[in-house]
Image (cartoon, rainbow, N blue to C red; front, side, top):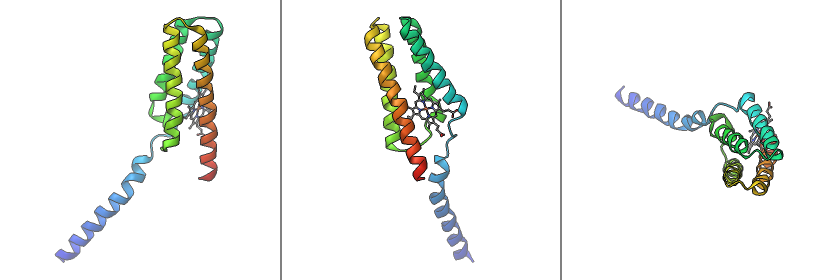
Length: 132
Ligand code: HEC
């Protein structure tokens, strides 16, 4: 009887170890709200850049960087996804720095880089979803 209890315990622990990583990976899927915010902030950024309003560029890029930090943004846990998220982060950081340095031209270039990261990541996500 004692042996069976131990055996059952071991099976239980084994199952737990096997299942846990799958459960732990199930983070909240990005809500439509987070995504809409992304679009809204990047549209406002474009507006601020075209109007040469660098304080607003700093503010809106800061908002975007906040969105990136929300759990829902990390929709897929792969190194590739992280790479696109990092590209996005780097471009947004560089844009903030350029805007703070009152360097409009450089800020515009980083806006383009950031927008590319939007497209690249979405293309990747679509690709992964198709395969999965
Ligand atoms: C690192 C990855 C990544 C980056 C970078 C990224 N997104 Fe997304 N985006 C996602 C994912 C994941 C979804 C959800 C796709 C799905 O669930 O089908 C999404 C969805 C969206 C949606 C659709 C929302 C809806 O209601 O369906 C919009 C709009 C959007 N993103 C805007 C942007 C903009 C604008 C940028 C750049 C400023 C950006 N995203 C950058 C990963 C990313």
